[in-house]
Image 1 (cartoon, helix red, strand yellow):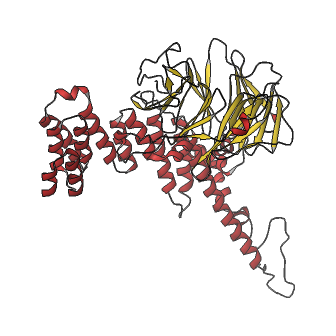
Image 2 (cartoon, rainbow, N blue to C red):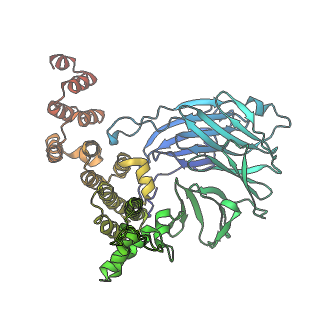
Image 3 (cartoon, rainbow, N blue to C red):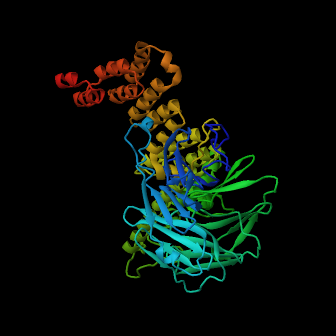
Length: 561
């Protein structure tokens, strides 16, 4: 297992296809970075990124060292696996992402739920078809698990635990669907048929919204989405065909000597090649507004003003005034609109100009609109900075935002500060030594706690602590995870209890961590009872002390506590 920058994280041997467990049918990841392997014999293994086997499930019983059924096809989704047997039974293994507790070192409780999806109507079809493609379209707690199944008889079916029905679309497929792909946020399903036709449906499969003829006799190796915006198809040696709304398409060429894999994400698609990982993403609207040639968007005007100000160009003042004051207020006589002749009162001997109250209100409204325009420009520059990967571009956009907000007396700088903090974390994660190139949207979606978990899994405790301090959040879980890992290491077996206590106690005092119960529990699990009692005495919470003493069988001490 490698990081995104190619650093080796862990490795282990894997049985060959000639072994008793049969060939590898599917390999993939769940939402919490659990590696899942599905083998032909029905053996499903769940492992973390350090290839510590967390749990395995055998779907079939063995008789005389042979299984009665085999797995023909499988799909891995964010919370588990769905496997299809040779006799068209659909078995779901779900709930593979249940969090154990708030200590990252403890990992995940894999309380797996194994159940059958309703598939009797499919097995009753004659002649009996076989499955050509399948895709999970819903795995929420409210709606349960729902699956789209494509069959060799050109039919599409929807399966759930209690229901199975054929999807009757407006136009039946002209050939079997051989690949299905759900858009990351749900809502759309891409379907590739054996005749080379790409179809895009709403997720209910009754409303077709696009049809694209690829004119290819060979099926693509992969069919995936790039965010919510377009569909990617990969043919080895030919490259990638990208199809967007309105049947617009473009080709991305990759040589046959550079094999690649497409890894779809919620807002982009990663192109993993032999030499690099590339990120394909729709240009965010804020960046497009600023960087378009000849753009007159307020954000582009603000960026130009900032660059002019840095160069000492007086045009900077013109750009800002265009967004902060109305043209009429600064260039016309009060009460007179541009292009309007002054109105005189013939009965007034002084011939003074009459100032209209309506014109004053219009000017105030325009000033307010100009203020909103500048505020939106500042927000757009902040958003554009967050979406950039290049640190120099980030700094330039943040300077523009800072320059613009200095003209807004009531602007709340909280978003600006939050963006700066987020970018420091993202840039640290994107470093080659870390190899976690997250986008800004992904950061917002998963949150800081999940990022800390990911760092702890990679044993990057120092960086995790720095992230905690930078974001001003509690580091208790990180320190506890480090302590549990410290006493569990093989090399720690040669260290004395007092030495381990001294090292861990020093760190706990430095980071102001007050609970030692989990460290004591970990010491118990590795048969270091004396060390467990040392940390147990340091635990300030009496209830946790009593619980752990009962686990140790120290009932007399527990009663005294």
